[in-house]
Length: 107
Image (cartoon, rainbow, N blue to C red; front, side, top):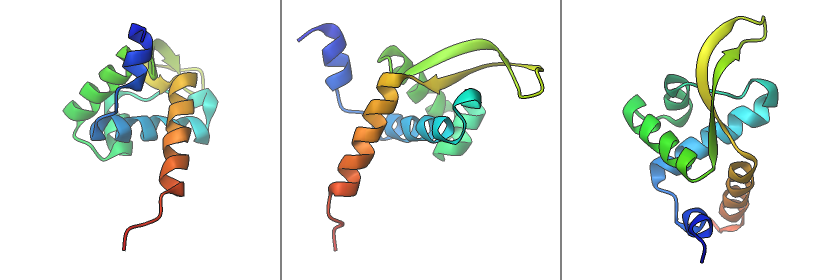
């Protein structure tokens, strides 16, 4: 198995899964303005900022999140840097969601 395949095949931690879902939701709401800073990711994932930052960096190393700086808001004002889900990350998030939807709820 290649290094890339093994990185992608490794299971996500609970924090990574929460961040991936938060990034997916941000993208699904508005693909043009889906980048989030660590505070935004923490708010959307219900994680403390430090844990959200650690999980986001881990997702970036796995190719499931990407980083950009020099981001602009919808008025063209610069507001800094942030992270967004990658295409591969979105595919994995959708597959995880479909798998969860297909799993019968436990009584």
